[in-house]
Amino acid sequence: MPPVAAVSLVITLVLGAVLWIYLLRVCFADSAPLGIVALFLPPLALLALLPQWKSHRQLFALAVGVLGCISIAAILAA
Image (cartoon, rainbow, N blue to C red; front, side, top):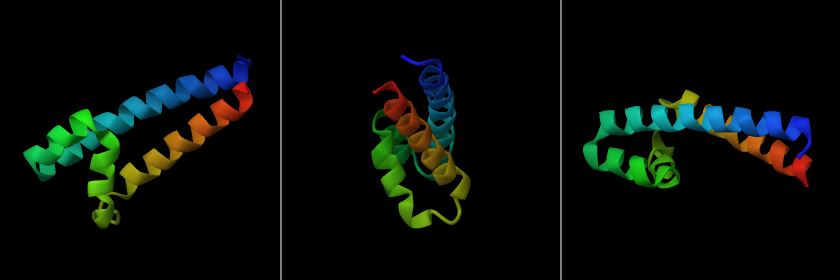
């Protein structure tokens, strides 16, 4: 694996962990069942929060950043 892909992968892992913790905080503040869904199925919780995207812009911006970094790592590793 090239060094740039490895660094991008590490950045993705860190941003993904921050995203998951932030998602848990937002979902548990909204409702307990949604928080449990976020604990086990984070993509489904993101989809559940999609209608309220304007109030959670930072959450979705972070998700797009994680997707971008993992895409860069996958392209460079191939």
